[in-house]
View 1 (cartoon, rainbow, N blue to C red):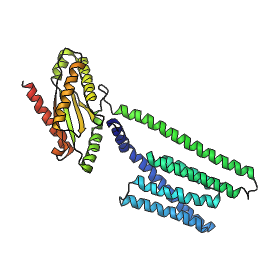
View 2: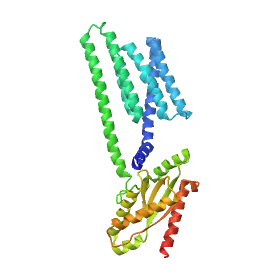
View 3: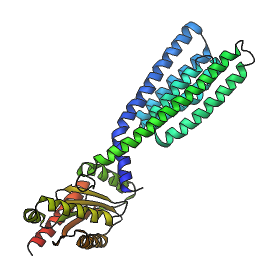
View 4: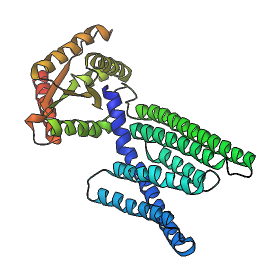
Length: 345
């Protein structure tokens, strides 16, 4: 996975987990309330113990879900999945057994289908959705086989059966297509939102997400990372002598040179003005020096200007510092020292 795709996934996870958490919490809460009402109604009016047991089981399972989350045994995404497995593969089959195709089972099944498509995403959605559809098909066939010999109105039963299957297909197709379309549009929007307009590099707004990602790898398996800060030498002087349009051309060319020389797993950020920040893993002092030399070599043939453009750089490794903020500060300090040395020549 390249750096941009990693960043996109991190950005979406950070910003959409809270929304999905609210949806999952709402579904679990309302399901528990509805099943509690079912326990009360069946206990008082109908006195059907199987209904009481199945509804009470859902309430208990909702409580277990919340307890698992509260104890931090699982994320709420996994805890709510545990609850939905009970709803899909215990409560739903019992409903079909008790009411059949002509009862409440199809309506309950459609509500659960919408809940699955709303609550989950990715591999969890694919697997749960596929298994639930297969189980619905099996339950529908079973119900039809059981009820056809005893029904007094076969056409009505067949219409109900066909209508249910059409509803399942239409709801599934519509929600999945809308979800895919939303994901595509959202990805395009996010990709453009974390890009710098002038250089098309990543902008500074997403630096925190990048550092968080690298920090997680560093803490989990001690995968060290290096921050390389680059600054265009005497950029203000070039701007004053040749104008800001010329300066923009220089920045775009440098950005292209950097982008062409980094690995797909590296992150390149326009840190500000004429400063660029490269986040690299599996790098060393020697590899950083060679990296900067390749950039300067590429700049000689890419700028198409009669001006020699050079960059100063400073870098720091995470293993050198106590905190991520210290890494950035150390890289900036070393950059400043190199610029001072360059200006004093």
